[in-house]
Length: 237
Image (cartoon, rainbow, N blue to C red; front, side, top):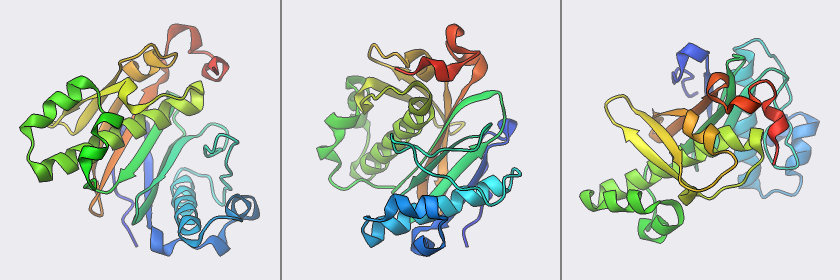
């Protein structure tokens, strides 16, 4: 069993859990979740099951036992009232992060393999001009790991913001700035996005778990755009 001791944003009591994808058991899912993967291939079904198992373990640690986590039409997890959270998986590991801290408006969590196959194929699809310029300082191995980290940071930011705002954006629309001394990062909107203020007001953390890159991104209610602090869900676009 994987450890659940991956600590991120302890000031908001963000709880994480991880499960090996190979341990995902679709037959043990509640009916509402099992329905989501009726037509899924076995590998995808295991990934989904492992993610939900991780989510249930994390929720149980903050007082929500036996919770079903169905999926919205937009394919986002539907959390219990008062919970923010996110689920992710790589090829080997599935994980979830949840919090019931009402100071949080959004929470994103992502897991990625530590290297990217043929990274040159994805650079222009995920990176800004400034980010591409920084790649000249990296060797081939560093390049793959760095790209995977940037992808994960952007995915975590997207997962924190999109369920609240409802806006789709591409990875080149945001730019990541890493702080290697603190394993933290910020994201900046590089396009005219409705969710730009949310992205710019958030903060992230990165690390590793079971050999995988793990990232998390939070947006606090006090850093949300002034006009949506009382009702962020009312800002759907």
